[in-house]
Length: 97
Image 1 (cartoon, rainbow, N blue to C red):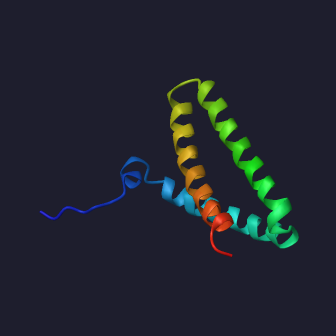
Image 2: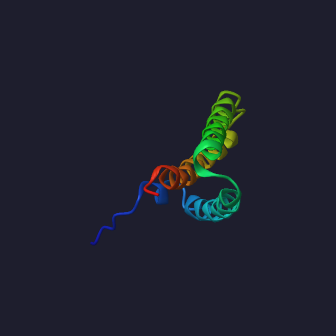
């Protein structure tokens, strides 16, 4: 019997990969449009940091206020998608120019 090696996320949340793809496509389009109008160094990096901090605060607050099993399920999947999309931008912002 042949065993396949798949990421754990595919087993835990099969729909998260599609949600991540859609989130990355939307976020990349917004990022490209905004990046075209704003300089990278002085204006954009502080905005990116504030946006990431606000999102983490919102996820933390949502975790603290979760109401039940469905809320926990949705929060876990949204956090997975958010981390995946944020990794795209961390690589884009701090990678070689």
